[in-house]
Length: 283
Image 1 (cartoon, rainbow, N blue to C red):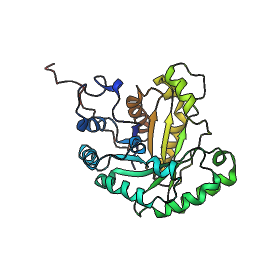
Image 2 (cartoon, rainbow, N blue to C red):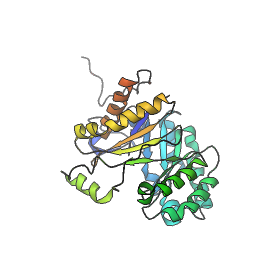
Image 3 (cartoon, one colour):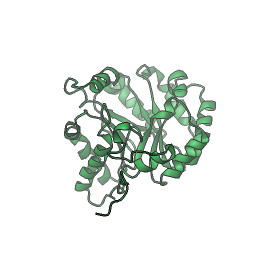
Image 4 (cartoon, rainbow, N blue to C red):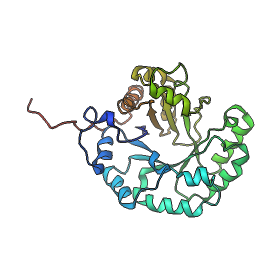
C-alpha cells in the first residue's frame, strides 16, 4: 500500500530558492523535485520525444519506485487518433526504456472530439500496447460522463486490458468565477466535466485542479482525501497529481495532500525529506 503524489512538472520558476535550490543544472532538477514528491506527470513527451540521454538522466535522478506518468505523443493520440500507430509507439517506448519500473503508466490523453464512435480504435490500440505496460486513459467527450451506455462501454474497453480511467477533476476550478489571470486562462482551456471517482484497477490516477489560493485548493480536495483513504484500505495504490492554475503552491500542496491522507492512514510511508534550498548553516 502506497500513495504517490506529484505535480504537472518538476521545474517551476516560483519554486526556485523558496522550495527548491535556486541554481540547479538541468540534470539535477528532477532529483531535487523527487525529494518533495514521489511522482510527476510527464507532460513534455506530448509535444516532443526527448533524447535517449535525457531519459537516462531522468532514471539516474530518481529511485526505481518513483512514478512517472508518461503522456503519449500528440502524433499518436491527436493526429493519428490511435490508428496505424505501431511505428510511432514502438519508437517512443524504445526511448523510454531506461526508465524501467518508474513508468507507472502510459497516459493516453484523448481530444474532446474522441467520442463513442472511436471506442473501436481505442480498444484496438490498447490491445497492441506491449504486455507489462499499464495504460491510463483520459477522455474529454461529454458523452462518456453523461450517458450511462457510453460510460459503461468505455469501462468495458478499459477493463478488457486492465487499463485505468484517469480522473481529471476541474469541479473546484469552476466552482467560483476566476480571480486571477491564470485562473481566467484555465477557465478558457480546461474541460468542464462531471467529477468521476470510480477506480477500475489497483492503480487509480487522479488529476486534481484547484485554485491559485492554496487554502481554497486544500478545502476543495476533501472528496479526494476520503476517496484515496478508501482506496488505500481496499489495497489500491493511487497516484494523485495536484494542479493550480499558476502552480506556484502545487509542490507544497502535493505534500500537504499526502500528509492529510497519512494522518488518517498512519501506516502509510512518509515522503522523503526535501533537500535544503541553501547551504547548511552553523546555527
